Length: 87
Image (cartoon, rainbow, N blue to C red; front, side, top):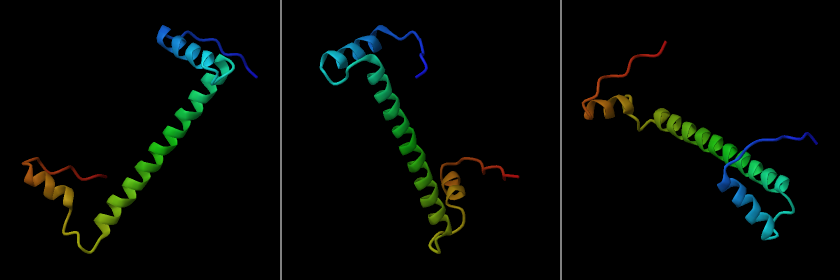
């Protein structure tokens, strides 16, 4: 396994040491690996939620109940200028 050396804050060091002394992890490498796995899952969750939101927005736009461009209507109600057309 490759060795990576880096500097971290005292707060991060304290958290790592706390996790090891609590018995949750055997060493700092396990703490960092676990934290990175959690970060990866959170990134995947955000990507999934963004995809779901885009799909839901498109579903609303494509809905027969939608009249015109809802975003243009909202901008008009707020007194904002129309959005420039995309190329």
